[in-house]
Amino acid sequence: MSNVFLIGDLHFGHKNIHKFRTCFKDEEEHQETIIELWNNVVGKRDIVWVLGDACFKADKLPLFNRMKGQKNLILGNHDVDAKDFFPYFNKVGGFASYKHTWLSHAPIHPDELRGRPNIHGHTHNHKIADKRYLCVSCEQVGYTPIYFETCKEFLNA
Image (cartoon, rainbow, N blue to C red):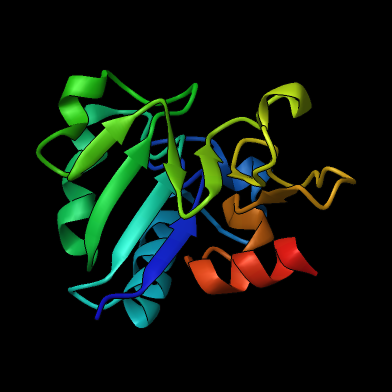
């Protein structure tokens, strides 16, 4: 049986990422750390939903071949052409409904939640003060994919 994980805002190919994520000395250290942390928790049969801003430049997409698991992508505002992602991701879309939860890059407007919580990326260090929302941007999850069941526990608390 496979586990399901989520993470957002990998920002591969962002030349100045180390200016925003100051725990990294440069873009390469940032990428290599995320790949290592990912592979430490994700198995080859696991599923990972990347909730947007996966990659700024198409030449960085092959990095995803080094990452374990079956990958699905919710497109973010910084992602390159959607068609470029298909060789690296099983599913590519704008948002998804998964086990009575909305998965999106940016938070969904409260009027559109329709009784479901929203797991999202995009807001990085900012948390929405509403238990219906959970941000899984890299900064919020220690740059490591987070287990879906852990997200559900937080949303149901």
